[in-house]
Each structure stands twice: as C-alpha cells, then as structure tokens.
Image (cartoon, rainbow, N blue to C red; front, side, top):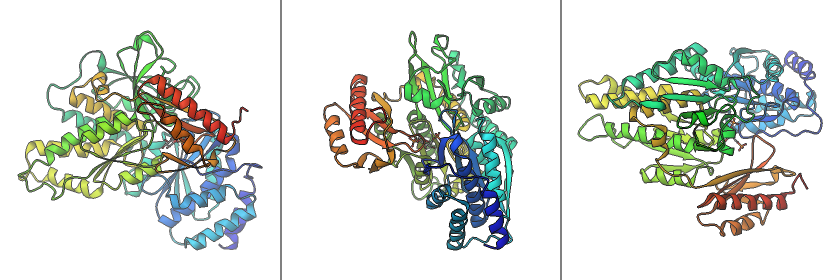
Length: 554
Ligand code: G16
C-alpha cells in the first residue's frame, strides 16, 4: 500500500470509530445490530466491497438493511459478482475489519489482506460498488458511511442505486456483471415480460375464477409495498391490492416473519378477507409467504416457503416430464438433475411430500448463503427456507439446452417447445441472484393460473405437522455450537441429551435449537403430531436452553 493510500485510510477511518465493548459477528447474512452501533462497521464493509471489486474485477453490491428485524436495527448485506452472497472465505476478513479497535490496526489488517490476496490497489481496474438501502431512517447515514468506505480506496467508485428491495440490488449486480443494463426499469421489464410470457403459455381454460382472482399483499410497511405498486402498473392478468404500504411501523405486527412465526393475521387484515388469497413480504422484500385469514378468529392458515417450494417443484416437474418424453433426439442423455434444498426448519410433511414426488432433497444450515450454494450444483436447483426465502436456479448449461430446443423447430414438438419456453420464462422471472418476494409472487401467481388452482387447492398438497418456534434470550448465544445442518447441538455438552429426552416424550416429535445469526437470541423449533404437543416440546426445550445457557431474565 502506498503512502497516499495509507494516509487517506487513516484520515477517513478515524471519523468512524467503532463502539466500545461491542463485538460484531458476521451473521447469517452480514452484520446486523441496533443501528446506533453500526456506522463504523458499515464504513469498513465499504472498504471490503471496494477490495472485493478490485480482486474480482467485477461490480460488488452493498445493501443497507436489517430485513425482518425491528425498525431500530439495521445491517449490511454484501452481493458478490454473481449477485449471490459474499463468498464465505471473506467473512473472517469482514469480522476482523469490523472489530479492529483503531485506525492503525485497521490499516494493518487491510495491508496484510491486500498482500495475501494479491489485490492491485493501483492497477488499471477501478473498483465499482453499487449501494442500496431499504426504508429505515437510519439507512441514510449508514449509506453515507458505506460511500465513505468505498471512497477511502483510491481506485474505487460507489454508485448509489437508491431505495430498493434487497433482491433488486442483487439482481442489478448480477445483470451489470453479465454486461446487461442494470436499472430498476430493466428489472421491472424483465419480471413483467416473463410473467406475461408464462400467462400466454397457459393451456386454455385453466384460469382461476371467483373471489380468488384477487390477491391482497401485506407489504410489511417496507420497500416491497412501494415497488409492488410500481410493478402492478406493468402487469395485466393480476388483480393485486397492496396493504401496509409504509404508513405504519416497519415489521411491527406485519410482514412475512411475523405472519410465519406467530401464525396470526397481520395488521390491516381481518374477517372481511376470509377466503381471499393473501401474501406477506418482509421489510426488504426478500421473503414471501401466503396465508388465508380464518373465520371468527385472528388465526391464519399459513402457506409458507415449504409450500411455495412444493408448488414450484410440481410445476417444474410437469414441464420436465414433457421435455423428457422419449423418442426425441433433443432429450439429454442423462435426466435433468432437479435438486431440492431445505433447512432443518422445513416442515417434516413438506420433506415427505417432496420425496414422494421422487425428488432429491438435501439439507444445509440456515441462511441463503448455504442453500443457494447447494442449489447451484444442479441443472435446476430449488431452495426455500420455511420463512419464505427462496428461489429457483438454472445452470448456464441447462439454459443453453433449453434455448436449443426452442430454436430447433424441426426436432421438437410444439408441446416440448412450450415446456422449454415456460422454463426459460421461469428462469427470467425468478431472481437468479437471491430469493425475491416480488418475482416469487409473480411465479406463484402464474403457476396457480396455469394449474387453474385456488390457494385452498394449493394448500391441500399436504398437511403441515403442527410446529412451534420460540426465541430465547440467553447470556451468550455464541456458546451454542451445532452440527449436522444445525440439527444437533455439540456445545454446551449435555444439552443435546436433555433435548433428546424431551423429544422422546412426544409422538412424531422433532426439535432443535440454534443461535440466530440476525438477532441476539437462540431459536427453538419443535414439531409434533398435535399443536399442543409441539407447543409443549418447544416450551420444555426453551426451558433447557435457559438452564444450560443462562437466561437474561434470571
Ligand atoms: C436472513 C437470511 C435467511 C435466514 C434469516 C434468519 O433473512 O437471509 O436465510 O433464514 O436471516 O436467520 P437467523 O435464524 O440466523 O436469524 P433476512 O430476511 O432477515 O435477511
């Protein structure tokens, strides 16, 4: 590092001192904490993004958001050149940068890393970092801190892409690195045209009729509501009403996380909505769940990420079976590899259903960075977390194969061409970078219309096992270490045996605990044959967590 670069770094970084006595961890999807603690970390992630851009010679994205967390929190997510999450190899570097106690240590860590990674700080390539933020008020100053971070690297430029959903920013990074236009206009255009294409390919006579024609979306009082309003204007064939569009408090009693965890109606919904198809986004619109309001209560029938995945799998299987009909030279020598990726939170009934369809189901730890990476190993990989975060990935080779079928008129039947066209449209509609509530919603809606299904019919695909999720505040959540895709606790010792003893008391009992990577809690998930039993199991294991880990309430 030359003297000019060093002195710029020392100068600017000294304006962003880290908070005393706070250790930040790179969690499930980046740093996340009370917004007042984050300025210095965000500045330093700005530095990291500029270095990552120099290293990969590609655009990197930084998104200021705390997604489903309460409004007083904020956070930062990093988009790698593919549009996916930052490579996990760089997470330890991010942590040591964020926790460097002063500017001198910070510059030392940077210098060592630059040498180790052989990053040319004064080469020909200038780094480019796209910045976005959600609607949190704290996002304004944090975005400024990120800008300053990028500006502290001499050969780096930041581009403010505005107030966006997280998936929009990831999409823009991916598009730009593929040499495509990366504006919001292009994003909306791609989504609306591929949605239109799927509707045009619907077999005659399958459209849904009646009250189910209307869809009501809970926008979590976040950015997704605003973007859906804009997208709506470009769509024909979809009747959407958007609620919770920003007049209430972000994520408070609204949004996908609330609806999925509490299983009650979000603010602004009530008995007048019984029987209508409803959906919820989270605060940065990277999660989507559907639900039905129950008559005479505040309960909902949840149609979660698992069921969205089942719907997608069913539709894709249908298209693949048309494509793979024998007697055609364009059929791939090997069957298409369709993979399903879930986490331990997937309801057991969903896994059984997917396996009954003959699909390959694999498990990873929680977090998009894990599920996405696994899904990318297949020709078509579908990943969904039960909380509504998911997408469908198509390999480049498989897309070429589909393009071939489409263009080779003499070799393929009309039906095959239509199936290939549908799959190509799905690959354009569904975000290839990260889970995206807007594009996921459009794909669900297109498939329901294709099948002629109501949400009630969809929900009948299988019946969820009763489940319960709880949060436990403990003294140090990092004391919990898990293995086997987070299904077993290896530390502290003795707790897993105690959990097993509880599980054994319940018919079809399943339960695990894990430290959250986005909130300062340990999460408990339990499943059993009745709701009472699932609740009982969850509460008794929460008590164990208290006992072994030390409750902050005691
Ligand atoms: C993030 C991740 C998700 C993860 C969720 C909860 O979602 O992107 O993959 O499921 O956090 O993680 P944890 O249980 O570790 O708190 P979001 O929507 O909050 O960005």
